[in-house]
Image (tube, rainbow, N blue to C red; front, side, top):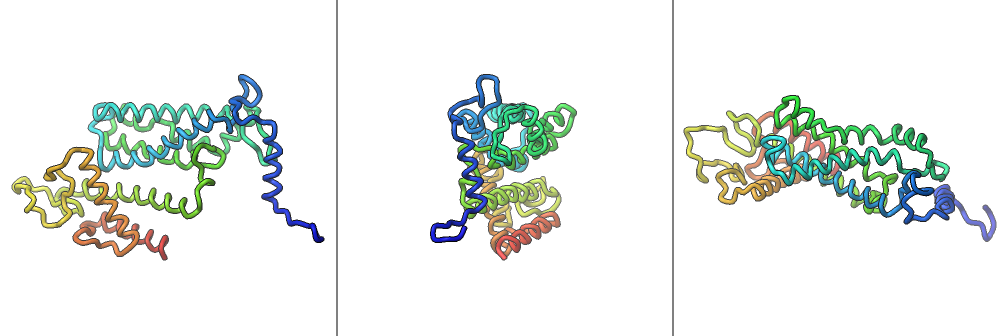
Length: 301
């Protein structure tokens, strides 16, 4: 409006006002929207805590699944570490329960009105986030294991669970941590770190599980006639954290190998791709290096 007392009003101001007016009278500490048996209130402390647990589980799966495949492959699905197995099963059950719970949590529509009708809630959920949640909740790894698939392939069947991080940090699933609470620069840093983590695991997998009769960035060709000692290795970083390392306990070995691979991937994404004696030594590693350099051009050009 014009005039000395006129003020410009944006659509976001109007929308915020409507939401504040709609929220008036809704007790944020109330678990149910309208009494026992009604849909759950998404702003209640219990639902926010539940969604925060799902966020923590999503971050754990995003970090752990590729590390499990590349660095610490399970000998079998049931005989590696019972504590990790129990944690995996608890998280899988939580993801499945989350799938069921979302059919019973109210949401706010485009008109800033709470929708508490379960049929409408189900249609809204099925049209948006259900399919990723279903993909993450399905135990493809156990299906593969029980059908006779190899341990490595069964572990790879857990890769879809990494997509869970896409859903749980949406603004519609407000927990203790949401993307809207993080600045754009910090959010970009988090995305870059997630990308580097995936690259680190892939790069080590290429070096450790590469052709045994050829060179990789991480190890020499296998030769039974050679007595492996510290002086046997030609390259400075070859075998770092391997069996010849005097401190090769699992937790230390994995940490050293991860740091070494992370160092190379980070340096490649931010610089030239050749760090000391660490450089690609077969075609698979060359292709990966090319992809990392393309990321370099995309992020820092």
